[in-house]
Image 1 (tube, helix red, strand yellow):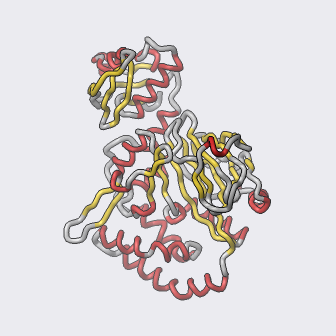
Image 2: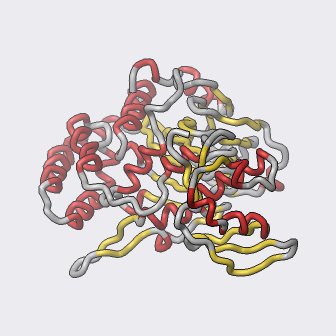
Length: 387
């Protein structure tokens, strides 16, 4: 991250000390495209070395069981890996993807936290939240630590309520009453949330990524120095040894076992190059389904964009009142009008490229574009690159 993209730390920490929720527009100067994008999340998510403990998924306030998006692999010695395809299927069905300790995985995020720690003298960690359009992964809740939200891609609607306690709690909007702050964050905007402040976030009309930086209480510097002295050489040697292991299992086992130490040592400069290259040098999994970067391109489609029908099948699994079908698309069930189903079955769609208005000519333009984006996200239509 360049100096031009540093955050307004004085304003941030003044708001946290006062316990005052606030918004800082364009807090990351010139926006934040180099900080975190859909492609960056894709790259981390596809790595076979991503520890499963870092990944969480939630939909409408309910946590999704880890078994739904991980695989157990190995023969003599078994271990778990994140299943990219399962994650994307859950994301397409409305689930929010969270990746904890993202500073361990991203040099740009680590640089951001390093600068913040140097300014404040406190510890900090980063969690990335990627949310599909119109969805909210979590119910209103408060966190036991101060949080600085950095919007990096798309937009997100936020509601913030008066602080009730200093701990972590979950609420309903009815219990909380009227919010004291209702706002929409755009890329580069910051939201300051002092600990204990109830809040809820919902992605707007396109998929949204934000970074939540949790700011800890000042640590005991002497204890930190003792920790660095005790673990420094051991951890550095272990990472070098792990990089020479021939087995993916051995690398995953080693890196996962060192998780706690890596958190404590995340500011040790000599470890940064080694920890950042682990993820860039592994062989990426072959992409079998749509990616977050693909979905970002779909979100940006407009009236002049062109689409084509893919070979992804749609099958009727039931009917509902009002002349609607329930369709199964790659395991995801959606409800559509009969006319929309007929359009998708039209073989002429497979022989050319068409605008949303041409495909769904029975709908007005906004509804046609929304339908085209929806089916492109589900893989039934494909956005033609360059259109």
